[in-house]
Amino acid sequence: MSKIREKFNHYVAANNQIVCVTCYDASFAKILDDLKIDIVLVGDSLGMVIKGDEDTHSVKKDEIIYHTSCVAKSKKNFLLMSDMPINSCKDKDSAIIFAKKLLKINADIVKIEYQDTHKDIVKEIISENIPVCGHLGFLPQYAIKKEDIRVYGKTQLEHDKILRQAKELENLGVEIILLECVDKKLSKLITELVNVPVIGIGSGESCNGQVQVIYDIIGISNNPPKFSKNLLEGSASIQEAIKKFHDYVKNLNT
Image (cartoon, rainbow, N blue to C red; front, side, top):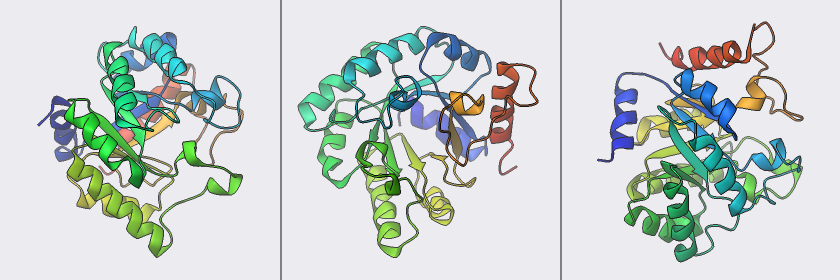
């Protein structure tokens, strides 16, 4: 068993919720490290948050590398997860090369928005001893219209597909599964069925952990999701706002 799986399996066994915050720079990453955030994600959401685009589709590999290297400079305690951006998993060879580049600049794990066509690619990446987080539910890289931004898994067809994919990711050997905008009942079911730590964003409180973008936590995003809350309101500092999120997650299911 890998060190990542061993660590977070211990969290799950102890009902110690996993706190994950998305961040893109060294200064915020230092705050997150000081506050003992478990996972820091360099997400391709930087397309909207940093670049001001409407989606993640324009994010390039070099941009993920740049922001990962920035965040890595502040890493002492947290696990650093980096997104594999759009078109980075078109074939296994280029996917492996890019994933290795991320690990070389001190990322610990790569996140892949998983589709059925990625099965062999994920298998090959993991065979190269590269830790993977599989992302299911709402997949921003493949969202084409506004109507794609919704809760997934409410219909029987979607329910069965996401559940099947979660089990598939478990069998492939991923370290973590991330559920985005997945129906709460389905999120709970997946969390109970798979022997992999499950973290969620907009997917209810039954997962083994929660994810939030730091800009949403402190209320400075241009278009925050409905499930986010500005925790800077009523807080004396950014640090206090982030600690509120940390404490909220840690106290779930206790």
